[in-house]
Length: 369
Ligand SMILES: Cc1cc2nc3c(=O)[nH]c(=O)nc-3n(C[C@H](O)[C@H](O)[C@H](O)COP(=O)(O)OP(=O)(O)OC[C@H]3O[C@@H](n4cnc5c(N)ncnc54)[C@H](O)[C@@H]3O)c2cc1C
Image (cartoon, rainbow, N blue to C red; front, side, top):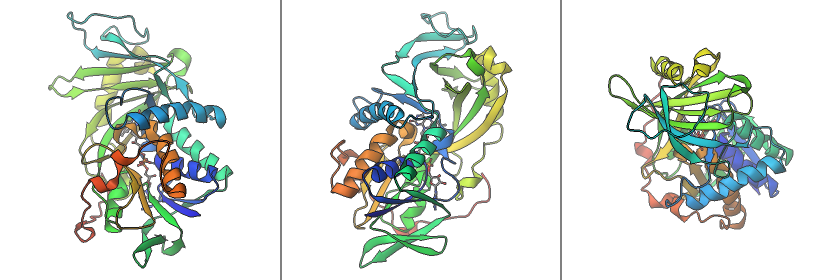
């Protein structure tokens, strides 16, 4: 069986790995570069049980276990490690009970308590993980083609391939894994809407000074805006911080995503206040990206109703890096066996949400922002 996957983010490459590992022929189509969007610019934080009590529980628990298995099985160089995780706030409050916490933060940060242990929280470097999944897929016969998917090929109502940089590529199945740009595929297929929510981040060169301790903090800016900074020191001696979101428009071209005016400056000021280590560390990256979200907050994972041969896997929101491995495993089962056995995909069935009318999806070209 030959499968085309559109999008080389963490979801597309994870599906590619699991399909290739089972012997399918896989071609991944990517408009810019592997992990060029959110999959290369996210925190890479993983939690075993933070989705418990929601429809994501089984997917998240299976994924958390698979992350550990994949790192060992493939001897992954993507910085997988277990972490201790704390919550707190910037700006001390006398009412807050102080718990023991990291020593590398400023005295201005109050730690309220530990919210994850090395058994329940972990991390990967998401760009390296995404590239590692693609490398493992390629070692099993998959290939990546760089260029733009521009539409689908149909035969008697079935999807039989994709239009790629003007060429017709035939396949038995096509998977839409274009992250927030999956919205554009609603012109090609009956898909529910997918939106993009923007987040900004900084990556610092902090060396070996910060141990494997993740922080989830709260901060109220002088104008009353509530921020929720997250700090993830990584195994490679860098530290990732995110915490400023916005509802800016998604550019049609993933290559044009750029930070909002002033957002990076606000985040840097906050970092200076949160930790003297961050205040003095060189900044390696100042960036923004869009996480894909759906109308009900759950991902779309499954066959596209009314278009045999077409599948979709997107809308993973804040948990795309966590949930990629089990999404890949279950999608490979669905495509090759007709049913996903490792995880019940029914809560994520695209048919639960009304599809857009393809004729009414308008695509406006924007040059920047
Ligand atoms: C600030 C921030 C922090 C985050 N932190 C975490 C975290 O700590 N843990 C976690 O689990 N998740 C986190 N996430 C969420 C996670 O990053 C996303 O859910 C995930 O990366 C989405 O992956 P994706 O493969 O669906 O999409 P993307 O990474 O957006 O990939 C889609 C790909 O499709 C390509 N594409 C688009 N159009 C076309 C086309 N026409 N032809 C070919 N290719 C095309 C794009 O170039 C892109 O490479 C975070 C997100 C943000 C924004």
